[in-house]
Length: 327
Image (tube, rainbow, N blue to C red):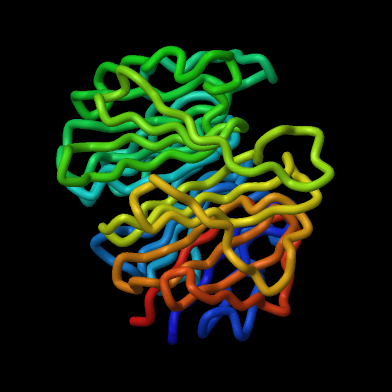
């Protein structure tokens, strides 16, 4: 199966793996090969149009699926932790920063800071906007998840914002790492992950049910630490990255085939040596997943998570990834 994998690392820049990761190339220019690339985004209208953030340098763009890059915006005053295209507006792009959110209405050439309800300080210092998601069914609704400041929403494309407040019984339930929305027969389901597991709301965020994943042997915690979540193929599949902590000494993937009612831990060919951190899928490649650990291991499935392989190549400290379908 032919596709490209793009991986952003801390200290090792951006890597591109061709033909499903058979051959790897570090992007040597124009971006610094020793840079921090914390966020990647793929245009939902053009699978060859990719964005990457570089700490202290700005945002870069590729028009050919990740081979050639050019600098498009000098958003340099704070680290960028997430990037998102607006699926309803080809010119609108969001950058989740540390802290806050910036927005572009000219295709990424210039960005302006938004006035949000995201705090400037949190229990660990400065909050990080881990995900920005535009509702695919409602162009006015935008969500932002924050580490550590919970979940925020705008109903008017970002003009005004509201905080969901406390998502659980203690403040670190608002340490939101992963976020996605799932439209099902009952309406819109909101899903977040935190150190405590998976939080789900079916009443527009009024209440949250939490699922704690099984702890790892030898861990000091009674549950698994959780990172990225995906509901990738418009069905009842959910995939969650877990580990013993961050960066951790071991990790796993939790798979649900019934919309989150039950989960099973994936049988990976080799135990991850750190927490599993990020998931890459694409709607044009149903059943395909690239899952990465914090410390560089890459696992692939081409059959809806039934079987997995591990790439021989390992790449530093991975913070983000995406899959680019073959042109």
